[in-house]
Every structure is written in structure tokens, then in C-alpha cells.
Length: 438
Ligand SMILES: Cc1cc2nc3c(=O)[nH]c(=O)nc-3n(C[C@H](O)[C@H](O)[C@H](O)COP(=O)(O)OP(=O)(O)OC[C@H]3O[C@@H](n4cnc5c(N)ncnc54)[C@H](O)[C@@H]3O)c2cc1C
Ligand SMILES: NC(=O)c1ccc[n+]([C@@H]2O[C@H](COP(=O)([O-])OP(=O)(O)OC[C@H]3O[C@@H](n4cnc5c(N)ncnc54)[C@H](OP(=O)(O)O)[C@@H]3O)[C@@H](O)[C@H]2O)c1
Picture 1 (tube, rainbow, N blue to C red):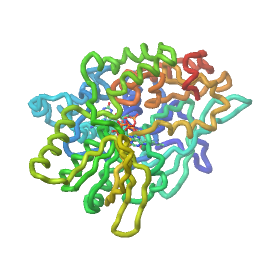
Picture 2 (cartoon, rainbow, N blue to C red; picture 1 turned 180 degrees about the vertical axis):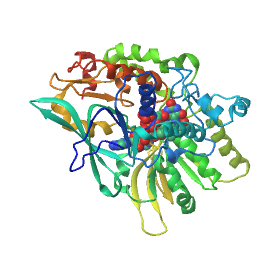
Picture 3 (cartoon, rainbow, N blue to C red; picture 1 turned 180 degrees about the horizontal axis):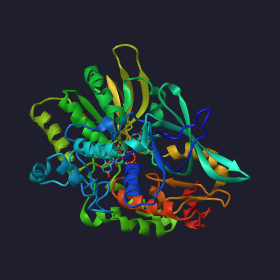
Picture 4 (tube, rainbow, N blue to C red; picture 1 turned 45 degrees about the horizontal axis):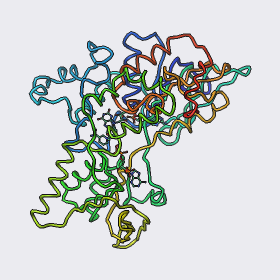
């Protein structure tokens, strides 16, 4: 198992080390196994077992993408790791057909992903967080990377690899005004919601900040638990996600070439123009449900939930007494301020994709600054022949599909092909990447 450094034995050098074992690197593990080059590979995952955004596996929460966009089907519909084969193996294919949907629950899709991950358990070490990636320099050249990981109890392990594929996902976006409250159990980000839901439900009225998909789902979950909620957002209204067919073509694999081929300013314009496919928007059916809940409480002459659009939190005070969390809320229309009291606050304020920067810092002298190539490999100087590949953080260069499940199998095939190609060292200079350089 593994290629750790022991005192007596130097570590074996892996061909490929995957950092993170979410859907991105799982899709890569399958592509490597299904006809990819024969490469030794290993994946390190900080969670103790496979879970796909476990704290948001809410009752009734549905996929926002067709199940056909599973880990393999767009690359090879005959792969045994398809969602349809998962249904077949679990004896639910006919039952699923009768649901007449392309959008399974997130709980079922998580079960599918975990089932696939189980087939690759021999290639993944769980409970290992990669804390550093360092160059192994020999005669001024970087031929291998050394990864350091931390496991249970703080134990450290070291790994050597000729290629590293980083697929570490996102981290919570915490509004600056809330950074001082981190660590207090009453203020949480949506990514830890389920772990805290019961405690929050006992705490009294809850403020949910944001008007995105996470905010809407958490609002309904708290409503179902009988909790009074204030939904607070800067936007004037909860807006629908555009998933109409022509617009949806921006998530087709072919669009990656189109996006990558544009100049920096054009790419930025495209990302702005299509923001409403993915960010600060809510599935239209869910909007109807939220509206229905708020309407029904009017019928019932209740004042349980409050919708506070065009509001911003200007100050946060954590009290030790029964006052709970005090939020100073400003109306962005009238400028009027009002202090409101909450048992808890959920920041459904989205995510950032910056984690790779910290990991890549020690490699800065070998990065040309030309960013990520079309094949997801970071451009490096001639002195570095190690392949460093990035998945899920290339939205600026590769388009909106990069953070989603949309192109996973195709991206995995492209990275697999790049891993099989002889190392060329430096990336071809691609000036148009300069604005998103590393
Ligand atoms: C609640 C929620 C629902 C979503 N639903 C959809 C959807 O329906 N459709 C869609 O297309 N997209 C959806 N997304 C977008 C999501 O980004 C993708 O579905 C998918 O999770 C991307 O896979 P990934 O492997 O790149 O990232 P992740 O799924 O985030 O996986 C990254 C993995 O890396 C691990 N990791 C992080 N840092 C380290 C480290 N230093 N060392 C070791 N391991 C590490 C993490 O524990 C994690 O398991 C959703 C996102 C959220 C937050
Ligand atoms: N069922 C599912 O499949 C499911 C469930 C949940 C999430 N997701 C996915 O996960 C991704 C993220 O969704 P998300 O809802 O978590 O995040 P999001 O779409 O990025 O929305 C974040 C919300 O927080 C607000 N916000 C951000 N910073 C703020 C600040 N400093 N102060 C006040 N408000 C702030 C934003 O408002 P502004 O516009 O004012 O910035 C926006 O309303 C999306 O791809 C989504 O589809 C999927």
C-alpha cells in the first residue's frame, strides 16, 4: 500500500499522484484504468471516505445536471462505471426509469460516486491531506515532486511523483465582516450545514445570507425543521438559473476549445454573460417552492420567515447571553439600519477556488507565468519536466464547465493523453493566458 518514505526504504516514484479524490480525480482514475497508458498512480484524499459535498446532501436536493453527464458516459457509454450500470447493479434501473427524470437526488448521485470510488479504493489513501508540494531539484532540474501529507494524529508521509494532478475543489467564501466569527458554532458556512443543522434548529431564528442554490435549499430544510428563517441578500430578487438548451451548450465539451481560444477580455465577457447559469441563481422549480412557502404563511397570517432582499450585513456581534448573534442590517435602498437577533447564521455565500495557489507556492521559480495550457498542464520552465495538472480551478481559461461535472470524462481523457505524451518541459508560450497567470 502506498509509497511512503520509511527510514529504511526510499519511496518509489509514482507516475501520477492525484491530490484530492472528488469526482474530478475519480474520473481520471477511471480513464487511466480504461485504456490509458500503464502508469503507476495514487490519489490522496483528506476526507476519511468518499463523500460528495456531504453537508449539503439535503432531503430532496436534486442534481443540477443530467445523469448522462456521469463520470464516464460522454467518453465511453459502454463503461461499467456509468450511472445506468450503477442502477442496474443495484436493481433499480426499471424503478428509476419510472421516475421519468434526468435529475436524480444528490443523495443517489453521491451513492453512485461512492460506489465507483469503492472500485478504486486500492488506488486511494483516505484521511491524507496534502499540505505541501515541493520540487526535488537535481542539477538545477526538477524531475519529480515531493508531496507531504498529514494523516490522523498529525502523522506525516512523503510521496514522490513525476506528475501531480490537483483536484482539490473549492473552499468557503466567507464575507470579510464574518471572518472574526469563524470558530463560533453559531455562524457556519453552507458547506458545514448538515453537521450543524440540529443545533441551529434548536437555537431560534436563523439568518441565511445569500440568494443562491445553497441558500434556497437550506431555507427549505430549516423550514421543514420548523425553524423561522430570515433570507438576507444584496440582490433585489431570487433569480432563476438559466438551463435552457441553447445556453446550456456552453457546458458542452466542444465549448472548452472555443472558450480557451478567445482573448482574455472575451473570456471574461463570456463568463460575465453566462454567470446566471451557475452563480447566485436558483433552480426555477425551487424558486416556486420557496415562493409557495412564503405565500402560504401569508394565508396563515404568520410572520415566521422574512425575505430581506437588498440588505447587507454591516456588523456582527456574538453575545454570550441569550441575545445570540446580533446582525446590523442595512437596507441598500433606504440606507436604514436595524439590529436583528438570531440564534444562528448560515453563510450561503458561495465558494472560492484558490487552494492550489498555496500548494504551488514552492514551485513558483519553475512556473513561467503563462498559466494553464489547453491540456490542463501548468506551463513550466525548461528546467522542470514534472507535469503539474489542474482540474476544477480553470474557469477563467477553460470556461464555466470547469468547476462542474459537465466535462469530467472528456477532461479526464485529455489529461490522460497528456500524461502519456513525452514530457516536453516548458509549455508552449500562450500569451493570451497572461491575465490568469500563476
Ligand atoms: C452543494 C453542491 C452541489 C453541487 N451540485 C452540482 C451538480 O449538481 N452538478 C454539477 O455539475 N456540479 C455541482 N456542484 C459543483 C461541484 O464543484 C462539482 O460537482 C464537483 O464536486 C467537482 O469535483 P472536484 O473533484 O473537482 O471537487 P470536489 O468535489 O470538491 O472534490 C475535491 C476533493 O479534494 C479533497 N481535498 C481538498 N484539499 C485536499 C488536500 N489538500 N489534500 C487531499 N485532499 C484534498 C476534498 O476533500 C474533496 O473530496 C456542486 C457543488 C456544491 C458545493
Ligand atoms: N442541488 C445542487 O446541485 C446544488 C446545491 C447547492 C449548490 N449547488 C452549486 O454550488 C455552486 C455554488 O452555489 P451557492 O449557492 O453555494 O453559491 P453562489 O451561487 O455563488 O451564491 C452565493 C450567494 O451569496 C451571496 N454573497 C456572496 N458574497 C457575499 C457577501 N460578501 N455578502 C453578502 N452576500 C454575498 C451572493 O450574492 P451577490 O450576488 O450579492 O454576490 C449569492 O447570492 C453552484 O454551482 C450551485 O449550482 C448545487
